[in-house]
Image (cartoon, rainbow, N blue to C red; front, side):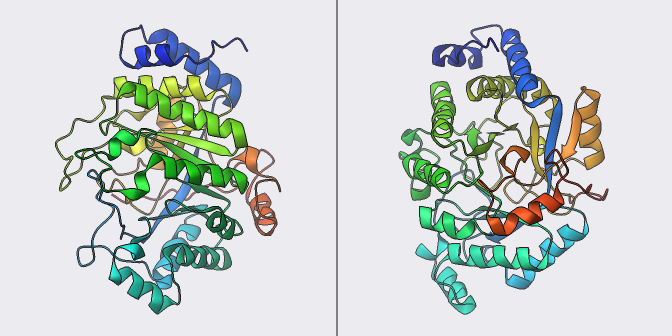
Length: 381
């Protein structure tokens, strides 16, 4: 198709503003149009925070909380209440999000798990995934942190896809004074092991980078090339999220500068250049006021958007109303379509467990998109 091969030095120079960005945006748009067309997707979801307990202490996170200050598990009844409401509203995805292995730090986590008959949080996630599949029409998409190959294989029969943000490939961010200090689960080598294991298990996988937490521009580009390389080995990365950091009150990074959208759009366009025409590229629409700017930077997906639940990772940032999302997308000349948490090109028995493939086929049209439309209700604010 005549694209210039991704170049690390040029990518850094584009992000740093040393080169006119317009040729980069033109290239990113052309690469996206050639590979993904003019269809922009989103996943109608409910956010299911299985537990807000975590053994890590990231300096920008408000999702994880200690016991007695909001750190707790959802009960099975809680899980069914959330996912049942999502099913009734026409959603498809149950996004299972949680802290990393809290039972290794908190006795309260071990106590809850014992009360439910489980030894590990991953075991509880598996049980909740089975519960959702048994009692609702939703499809679980688990984000339980680092996983072994065996744990991924145990979740595969009930999860059409899974995810883990790489965030950044640089171990420098784990040094004292950096955002991932004292966070064993943010070790990029360990995270890459999980991403590799998902490939070995043939699981459609979502990953991505978090931009603005103290990394350098070369480290951003290194992270994108790391994702490109692992996908080249396994072909399993279904989606890459390019997420901009948002400062949050009551965190050590509350006064840290946030990425400026015009600059961040250059990161997104570089990501499209590096990851190529076939990759699904997402930017969350609730983290930027004028989020349509990223359409011109080469994205083809808005990610999970909920008509019912808040973004538990960024609770200060409400989802756009679905009517607004459609209007802003279509005004720029694109078509907005709902999808499942697994992308159309991964819907076959190579990637989906035999016990789920029939459900997936029944829920999708001839192009692999979601059959039903999420109900037009006011989004949680």
